[in-house]
Length: 353
Ligand code: AHM
Ligand code: MG
Image 1: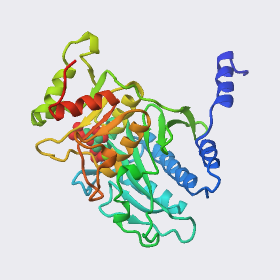
Image 2: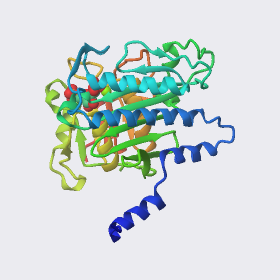
Image 3: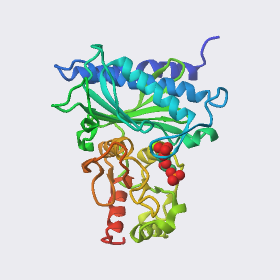
């Protein structure tokens, strides 16, 4: 049967406008005459692992990937079967690719050295949360992967890399990105020259450039926080949350509260629409919950590259000095003006509009 006019339009649009992630990466690589292609191959490995995790996730409920492994991870959190599977797929893809010499994963207590066996250059370090928000999988809520890429610093041996090589401030990231496994699957990343988003076309198995040069609004209407912990927040934060909920038509308040409990999904929505995501210190978690190296830093890099900001309430996230792989940090991230306002309330210097 011949395609309808509408189908024809979509088909032509597909062919004309969409660039694959691979094409895009190669184009970027060609801008650097001395590039060896190692970084492009590393991104290819990450996107391949993301496609495999996506495939496994789409079958959750049909095959036995729901539920827990019965283990707890290094954070003392219950490990979901999909956490373990996603970790395994990323490690396999990076090991096979040969461009990464050291992995730090939320699902593994120690940093994992990878022998490159002469296959690749092995000059990159990848830190990742293989499956963020995984406690949501059993109830079919969107989850994500977060990754952060560093160069192996001078003076470190790629055949015997130590965790210290990975403990670099976020400003040193070469690239960072996330994959959101939502109603569609998207890979969003930055190399420090803006943020681009690619949507997986499941029919051809390719990520296609659907969201070029993402910019986040300077101010949004959404705040995302687990306000169930309100009574254990600092006074300044409670004052900020109260202020966000006051009626004031001129400044667009009250703001809307949206909290999925899946950082990647909350962040992604706020990045596109404008808003702030907060995971502050609480009495029981004085350092907050999220991890600096593979949750806060990569998302802070993306937020800043899209025109937003990220702070722990006092210090710019990207300038924090890491001391350990699984270090936690309070996090306020999103639209620049909202992050600045949150910081002012936390520091007691806010001037109400
Ligand atoms: P995880 O890395 O173990 O999945 O934990 C991180 C998740 C975030 O995705 C989410 O925003 C947060 O934890 C939810 O925590 P809480 O239930 O305390 O609000
Ligand atoms: Mg996580």
